[in-house]
Length: 371
Figure 1 (cartoon, rainbow, N blue to C red):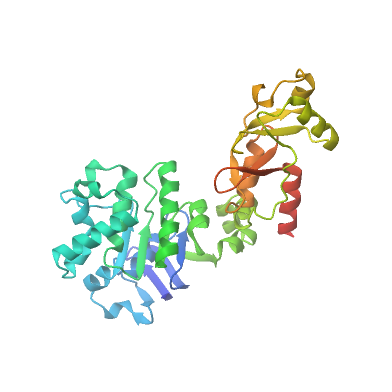
Figure 2 (figure 1 turned 45 degrees about the vertical axis):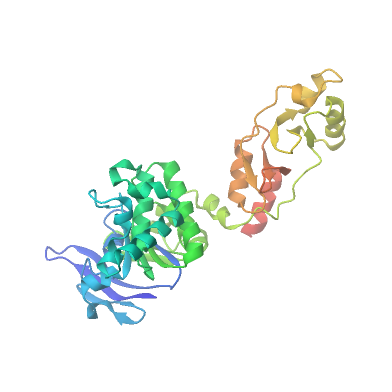
């Protein structure tokens, strides 16, 4: 557990970086510091490992005042990941990861074995251990940075905007990797970002800082989105906070329609009769293995010659699917909005269609969880 008790940082020119911060970071959880530039979030993080010394107040780790420890010893006991990884360019990937264990006096063989183990853990190939940082992509370098921070198995991991320098696709992949690692390792993580979407996705708790280093709100992501404490927090979160909040409600309870699903070998008259009976304007066509192929409208079916199979028609794209077991209402809503049929296609873990849900039914489900 990390505890800030009136921790402040004032500079001689009168600048207040952090103003009397009182906050507790729970053990084994991810706490995200978020806020605009100049709000003190990075300064607060750096006070934990004494890269910034508080002007007043205290910071404690598991009840121990960090000022009672030698700064170098303290830093070796805390994992630290920064933007663009900060790797040593003249060392191989394996030796970069082994840095802290070697500083702690581990034998080289043991340190390298630990580094190889961590490469696998963060999704790097063993052959990449002999490469140098410049021979890796930005995302791979960040994975090395995370592995290096974990090398000595520290209980606390500090991450200062670690994914902000990579493209959105790589960033999403790294976020997934961090969520997977945290589920397995349960470290006490303090993560700094300026991106509220990243904060909501990664954080068990989110601390929103306002300019001047003042803590505006400290809450669970769902609570933060549902009830911002003031106009500043509401403005920082953004106008679409209601949509973001849907990420916390599972899609598995949705009632899916599987009566409007037909295989590509089915003839148009079978689908036409079914749609006429139900009044549903779209049929979903799937392959033999139940993977989705596309939509066909009741108008197309009415105009198609008798005897033609559905797979021979010009199918409308299905957009993208959502996983019924693991995705959220937000994912289902996104799939429905992007579908030309206005319906979200739900699939199982193997990508096979379970059924679909209309925007109207999604709206009813969203209304029920919002009450």
